[in-house]
Length: 329
Image 1 (spheres, rainbow, N blue to C red):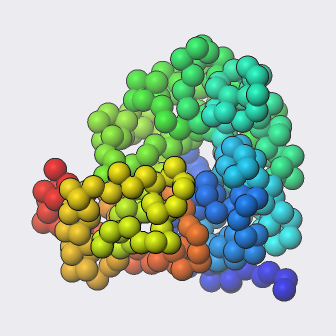
Image 2 (cartoon, rainbow, N blue to C red):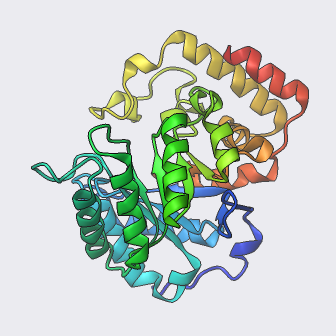
């Protein structure tokens, strides 16, 4: 059936400006790290992309190695774009990344100009696009001069292969230095993608301050901490869950009784707020306006609907925030 986007899609979403740029991103973005690869059901992925866009999610986040197999998430997304979204390309923010292992030899990972340019050329072929909106360096490379890596990002923008550039997994110090280089080159850093959740609060130790100082936006990946900040594991490991399978994404040893005890207390607070735990966790990441967007993963349409519904109750009282900190300490 021919897809036609919901005419009210922009009424359902909140949009935040990314740092000091002119680009607004949806408060909830959809990541294709899992469930969109060559081993996954194409029509399920297609249904999730359609529903996300109908709910006002305009930003879709990929990387060269997403799958499995590596590259197949970009191929899947490219097929969905061509079939359903040709008329909506200018309403979408599509991002991809390079830096982790993708192909054999010395140019298939890290941060050389050769690696970043070659990887994006491959990504654009898989996506069947002329350009992406955001291109990230996926992880810092201590063996390549930062000037070379940032010059590669600047070159890619000047070539018209990306509109904006971003960083992921960089420390506060690395982010500050990279930002200053990019500003000198004339291609400022748009956004940083760190892991951030109630259970992973590293960005609070300097990174968010650097982003504020440098005028860089942020998008938090794994805001539900691999699904632990949902009601899925409150009573242990379900037989059909990620932790019960062979995936290295979530290991059973991460679900300690200490962690699950905290999660159960957080779930009680979420219930008092009239939210699911997952919705409260997303609202918490977005609290205070320091995070531009929360990047979710999904395996079914209902999870995307739940995530967007978190925006109906975004605010916390001082008492609630203090209670969360007490539970997490």
